[in-house]
Length: 200
Image (cartoon, rainbow, N blue to C red; front, side):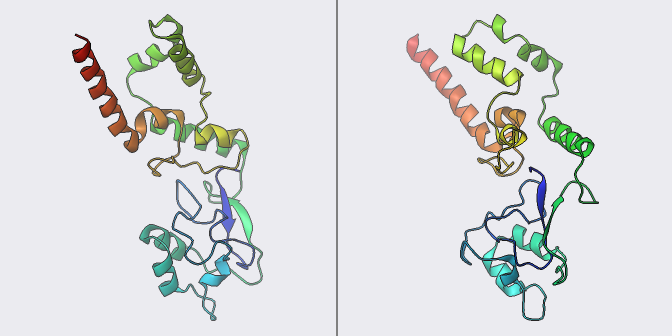
């Protein structure tokens, strides 16, 4: 389930690189290269005394991931690893909490201008190619395959944007909010102006 991650207990069942266990807002999976081996378990990150192996962790993960890992409790050899809902202090998921979290994510990248919202409501009235109107209609109905939409349909995917890796890839983020796409928009605008001048 999107929004769930592993709570470390015995450390014997959680994979470092294949499972979601790092506590951060946009992705719970390790993004650093698998220098410890793809099949390594979280248990290998502890010393014989049961504390985090700081030196090993600092040398194997990015500074951001290292800080997130070291912020975790050490776990317990008597409590099994278990799944929790990250976005609630109790760790328990409910429809109400999931809905509130989803609405919060969708509102992060929403345009503030009411004129933009009104424009999106009438794609069929625009004088653009038919395929463009279909795309706009899909956007209006939130039917484009963003990571957020795929996860909401039950697919096991990472929510974060695959381009900027900073925020969840919602429809609004994919079109306007992604910092990586802003350069592409600038290039497209330049090419439009260039083609117009050549045509003249």
